[in-house]
Length: 370
Image 1 (spheres, rainbow, N blue to C red):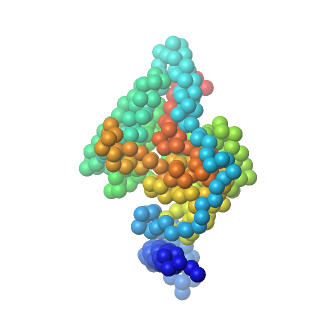
Image 2: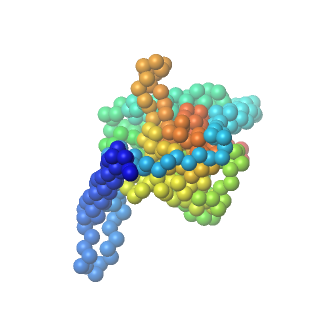
Image 3: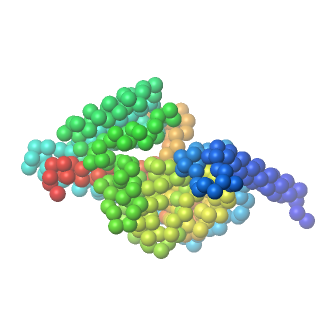
């Protein structure tokens, strides 16, 4: 006989899934209706793509409802921790040597500029790490800090000034920007030769097209692949799932995994049964920006898990009043996966290292050292 408590749990799970499905269906229906598709017309039915764009609202559109028992991997219950810090330190050491040689030979060093709008905690953490990394390797560093209330014109003016500055070889706009900004408009102002974040439409386009080479590969995606390669993880032919489809991480990582011949799927806030899709992954990249979204039941035993999420959680005992956790429930993941990146200390340090590498390459091109 099935206990009453279990019956209630099953009914509750089904109800939550149905409510989530209805909310998702309603949002998609509104998006399609607003695009003014007239099925009775002989005109093409494809709407403008931007009319289909929706914000991925994970917190409101998804509730954990999977009650499957968690399978253990045959790794004695302890996944290998992929140490992004040590890998990043090796890369930074080699960069510092090149910078020292550059300074001795031509009296110049790479210059990196950051434009920071507002005071997002995660953005402040990223920028703080970038400043320290630049000092470590001998780069020149400049920052333009603007209030959240500033205008697009002010951001574009700061970009234009850095575009003209010959001592600055790499520029990045710390994303995401506040919602009232048009990121595309701002990034279009950025000089392609200084787009060390790799977000310029031409860089993303060249990343997507076989036979093309972008000037710069987006840093987080590049860092993820570098960690896989350094960990001797086979990519070609493997099933990979990227959770999250942002222009910053999800999309570039999807494209780069494809270029490395993985079979790639994207999971987003409107994906039905995301845990089922995730369980197919030999390589799983979590980049949704939702704390502990990925539970052990989402993972295929033996999967390699890269946790890109950096989510600030209030912690009065921490130096900054908060601590950072990832999108993956690490306590459960280590029981299932064969390897996993920690937060902090995993993908984050590699992202910064790839930014330094891209900036060094930009400087060498600008100074005709390649």
